[in-house]
Every structure is written in structure tokens, then in C-alpha cells.
Image (cartoon, rainbow, N blue to C red; front, top):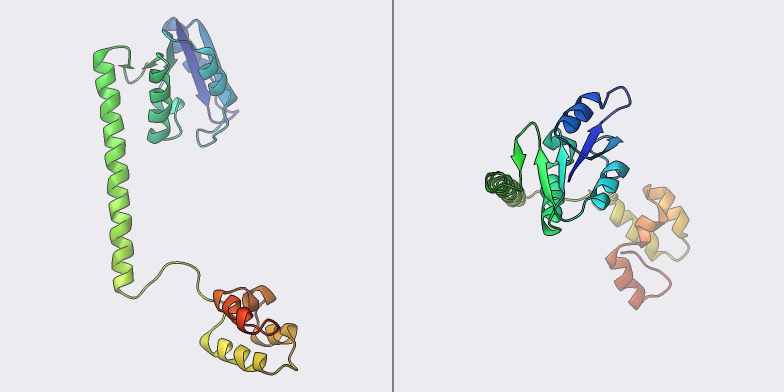
Length: 195
């Protein structure tokens, strides 16, 4: 049995075109969603995936109606294949119940994996180049070197309160007391600490 799935992104769009195409393709049941493809929650898709059984074919008008991305599409179709359910896209003439359709789908999957690998390599190369220039990722320190020195000097005097030190150097109490050096200092001097 062919089970149709149709989706539009907004309420201003209409499902008529997709419904007509799925009806012409002899879909016995058509489930729909009005939700952006970027949203993970699509109740109509969930219902369609629950409804299909081994031997059925989940049919869509176009590939982008099913998956949020190529990776998402591949995951959905692979899960269907493991359950013995076929997948068909009318516009792209892809049908995983045929050898040619399976070949095209596996080529898509291989290209997606290749793309992820290339992106990963570029990211690592960029990070390595940045480190070679002395740049490191992450947030900048809230407290400058001068601010640290001033805070350490003020902490050395037991008359200074933590809140007064924070107000003077312009940081929060958590910034003043919440770094690894503070934990080491706490072991040595339990009452007065910084980093």
C-alpha cells in the first residue's frame, strides 16, 4: 500500500498540489503537516511513520517535504528500509523498492557523508591555522591582567570584603571565586581565595 505524506511550511500555503499528486499516485492514505521543515516536531510525519507497515511505501511529492536536511532524510529512509518499508518521491522519480532507486538513494547518502567529512576537515584545518597564529577559541577573560593583580592585592588584605573587591574591579562574585586557581587556593587557605 502507498501511504502519502504532504507538508507545507506556513498556513498561507496550500496542500492541494501535493494531495492531488499523491492521490494520482494511488496513495491509500495521505497524512499532512503544516510546519516548517526546520521543526523537529511534525505530528503528521510521526503518524505516517507509525502507520506504515512492512511492504508499504511512504510516498512524498518532493524530497524536501520529508526531511529537514539531507542527513535527516537519509536517517528517515534508512529507518524505513530497516523496517521493510519502501520510499518514493514523485518529483525526483526515486523509488527505493527498485534497484535503480536504491542506487540513487545510496549515492545521496555517500555524498552527504563525503560533505560532512569535508566540513570536518576544513574546521580542523581552520582551528589549527588559528592556533598557529596564537588565537585560541572560547570566551575572553572578564578580568584583565591589571584587574587580576589588583584583585590579588586587595584579597591579601583581610579587611577587604569580597563584595567590595568585586565592585572595585568590575566583576561578579562568581568570576572572582569560581576559577580553578580559587579551588587550589581554597585547599591552602580555606577562608581567603582567588582562582
